[in-house]
Structures are given as C-alpha cells and as structure tokens.
Amino acid sequence: PSPSPSPSPSLQPPVAADKAIDFTQVPATLESAYDRLDSDAAIRPTSIKVGSIWGRSAQAALLSAPVRTTLDPSVQASEKKKAFDLIDALSRTGSLSFDTAELHVLIAATHRFDDSLMATVVQTNVNPIEKLERSSLIIGSIIHNTQAAALLHESQRERVAKHWAPALLK
Image 1 (cartoon, rainbow, N blue to C red):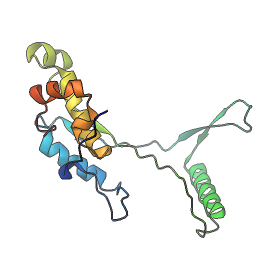
Image 2 (image 1 turned 90 degrees about the vertical axis):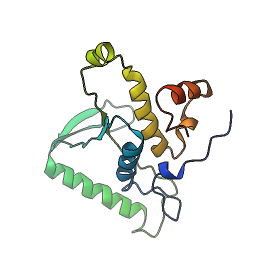
Image 3 (image 1 turned 30 degrees about the vertical axis):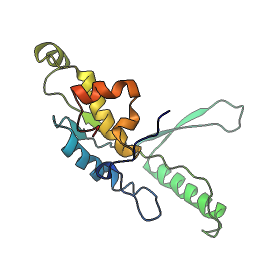
Image 4 (image 1 turned 90 degrees about the horizontal axis):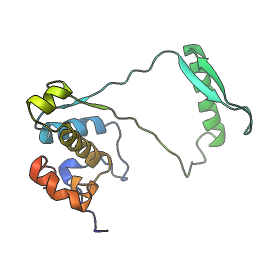
C-alpha cells in the first residue's frame, strides 16, 4: 500500500498537547469543515436525544439466557452510582490507573437533499451517491485525522477529484 498523505491542518481534529483528541471540540471542527467543503450545505448537525426509559440486556452467568429489563430514571441513577463506585474501587480511588480503556463517541449528521430522491435523480440529474460520498469523506477525514485522499482506494481518487470533490483531495 502507498503511504498515507499527511493530514491537512485545516481538517485535523482538535488535539491537545498530550496528543489526545479533545472530543468536545469535534462538533465545531466538523461544522467548520462542512462550511468550507460542503458546497451544497447539505450536511447538518444532528442532535440525538435519548428517552427517559432505557432497556438493558444482562446475563446472570456466561451460559444463562439474557434477561431484558427496563430502567426508569431512578434505576438509571442507582446503576450509574454503582458503576462509578466500581470504578472507584478498582482504581483504589484513583491511585491505580487503567492501562486500557475504551471511549465510544457517537457523532451524528444528516445529509439533506433539496428535493425528493426521485426528483434529485430524475429532474436534476444528480447522483445522490456521489453527494453522500463527499459527505462521508468530509466526516471521515476529521474523525480519522487524515486527508480524504487516504480514505479512498487509489483507483477512485481521480474520479472523485474530477467530478465532485476536488477541494477535498487537494
């Protein structure tokens, strides 16, 4: 495989001095990239709101069947407290570090078309897949901290640059 191009400074996610990504700044970085690179202004930030009642699937033992329960807000608060108490106990109140941990961040965006899908394809003769590819490249270049060209197979770079996303591949 060919070496990946170095990330463009304007597309890099916010990185603190210790080389960790500041996830609180990712939405603003994405919005800035949308403004610069999405000529159609089709990508919009999306807010995700969770419901007040959550579901949980748990197993009492490894071979037992999963049991699904619902958690109302008071049970959620109790379970959250138990989780933090467990972290506190495992880390001996912060004196032991966790060498390995995972943080899952959910970022949502909506790609909007001015017309219906059929009108976009038939009346305006626009391929919606190409528009979605451009949106995916904008988001992917920020999330993966690389240039959009590195996210494309080499055989596709010319097509993308020529037809619909030249600014992304500079």
